[in-house]
Image (spheres, rainbow, N blue to C red):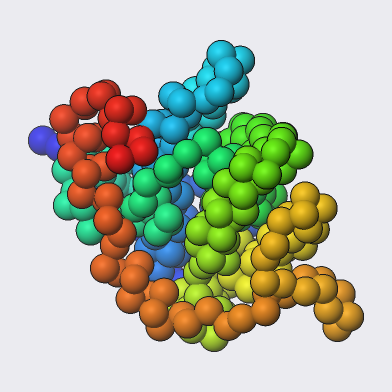
Length: 303
Ligand SMILES: [Fe+2]
Ligand SMILES: [Fe+2]
C-alpha cells in the first residue's frame, strides 16, 4: 500500500510565531496548511521558470558567435536545467510528483515567468535576458537563500545563487561588447532592451497593493522582501548599468527617502495580470518539445 503523504500539523498562527522567533521549518509536519500552500506556489514558480528558460535560451545559445561563448552559453542552459531539477526534487518532499509536474500538465498550468512563453530572436536578446532576467531571478533567490524559513530550499539555493551570478556576468560582458561594437550591434542591443525591459519590470509581480499573496509570504518568512522592494533593488542594479552603456530606458534617479531609481511610467497591472493568465505565444510549443523529447529546436530560433 502506498505511504500516506505527510500532512501539516500546525496552525498558520503557530507557524508565523515560530518563524518570527527564528525557527527553521524542515518538514511538512512542522508546517500549517497555509504555509505549505504558499511555499509550494513560490517553489513551483521557480521550478517552472528555470525549466522554461531552458527551452527559451537553448536555440539562441546554439547560435553563439564563437566556440568559447557557445560553451559558456551551453553551460548556462545546463545550469538552468539543473536548477529546475533541484526544484522539482524539493517539491517531491512536499508531496508532489516530479514526473507529473514536468511532463503531464497542460500548457496553461505551468507557472513560469511570462517572458519564457516567448522566443528569443538573436544573440543580443540572450545577453539582455542574462543581464536583466537572471539578475531579477538572483534578486529573488538571493533573498530566499538568506532568509527563507524553509531550510531545504534556503540551503539548495546557495549553489543556484552562485551560478546565477555567472549568468549575469555573461550577460554584462556581452552587453558591453555589443554596445561597444558598431552602430548595428548597438542598435540590436537597444532593440533587445526595448523589447525585454517591460518584462523585467513585470518579473516581480504586481505592486504590493494588488498582490494577494505578498503578506502571507512575508509573515511565513518565505522571503524578507515584498514585490516592490525586489523591483526597486533590481532597478538600482540594472538601470545604472544600462545608462553606462549608452542604452535608453524610461527611468530616472530620485532624491526621495530611498534615494534610488524609478521608471517613468506606471505599468497597467490589470493588463499584465490578464496577459499572464492568457499565456504567451510559445508555451504550447515548449510543452510539446518537453513531452516529445525532441532536440531539433535550434533550427527554429529565428523563425
Ligand atoms: Fe536558474
Ligand atoms: Fe540563470
